[in-house]
Length: 394
Image (cartoon, rainbow, N blue to C red):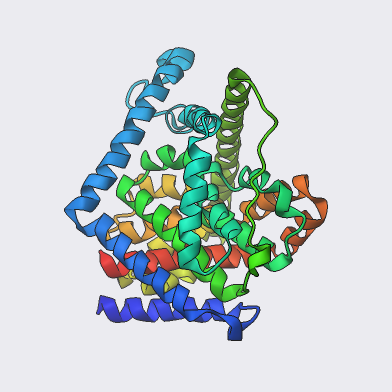
């Protein structure tokens, strides 16, 4: 039965993507089929095989070791505030390690290791997805550098891009997550779901963009020029990345305080007036999507509520709610919802991406702002596609 529901779910995703397509007749079927097959292959390996367990275990242990190193710095600054009693301080234990991970990314950038990986993995990916080298580079770079920083690296070409290519770049940035926050995600949900979502979303971003925004890149336009920052000393670079990581941690913390408090207030108001919380109402609205993603019918409302929280606030708020463990979701429902949460697809990301592009090129920033809702629509479909495929696998 789950296979029938899953296939219907895939058909719904394809139909919704076609509904928002700029040019349905130009959609390239072959690359899309290849990427969907690759999603199933990678998903099955990561979730259902011993090799997958080893790979995920290796990644999880690697991030675990990094977080242990990060805790040394955090403990030095915050001392007895960490894990005092039985209560974990979310800001200190989950968000502060972002500072260290950001610094590590800066070091790998400075040593030219990340640029090499991003460039050549992107080049290989462009042979599969039927898109240009720039789009493929951007997809990989977004998953490492983040949804705002990635545009700095393509600054030279940003002003020359037509709006269809700009959409793909922005959609990739919203469909993935930054490597600096991956370790924090792994403290809230199982690492296997984080790793699976990262890989499946990479392909999913190109699949949905290929349907919503199909186009062909001419060979003479398929040139990749990566912007290099003005040469800095090692410690100038390190200080910059450390501060960038701290800004991310502070921003996420502020967003969490605001959104969690607002949701609590709205829930209280709705319960007082209607006898049902706002989160439950959202759960009913999103429950059909949860069901066709593969969530069991009796858990669809709870799962839909978590999905809705992620969309209207951010993934950290939703992951924190899921991690509390009081929803009683089954293994299958938890797996599906977890992978859905691993992306930047939410309303606040529209402003972040438009602002990042506008800071580099005002005209293109205005273009990005105009198709903001369509960006969110496509990025959300990427998350639904990934979750539906996982629903067919687990």
